[in-house]
Length: 279
Image (cartoon, rainbow, N blue to C red; front, side, top):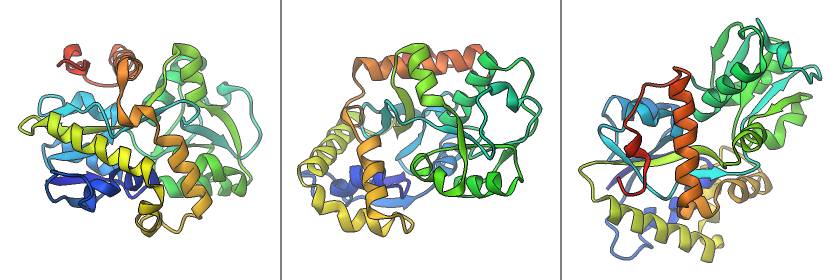
């Protein structure tokens, strides 16, 4: 089975057992490590592996050919993207007409940002500049952009750049909707036995929790020189019960998120029944 996911600690922790043959009856797995922005476009273009991780925000472009799986992804509370500025700001309208760096224009972070600005700004943001996520904080620090939208471990490290948080978009989303924030989704081609794949991924998650030491070397090998304590924070934040099973709240969070985005014209319309567990 071919699978693509990122080199981030939450993904390597989640899939370690499956990749290393520790899940009974699962087939051998060939992994492609790819940034989620890359897999978003692979899936939309019907390219790439049978199973992959993409952003929940990219689902409307892929649901004709892929099915959302109920496990392996990343949802949660207290783990949303942040809007950062060089100077300490507390008024969202600071962003009106400003240049903002974002890691992707087809990501949960970006859709949340657009939904939040639509609700809180009187005038539009100025330029949106797409750049690799690890370049965003240095660009804000140097004053090359007025603000940056950051994800992943940046929420733990932005103080190192002397930056300030204008908004925690996850906090806004949870307050506004009551739902967890949908970040990364696992999808499988419709030709794949999705129930079997879900079973294997769920067993991989269970193994990771039962034997966390097993994945340490694998996680750190792919963690891009991240400090071990930061990698562990990353895992603790993004691997949770929603990773094992979306559940009623998880499925509802995804539907509300993408329905809002579709209503705002930020994503293509999509068959709403495709985002139900019984689809």
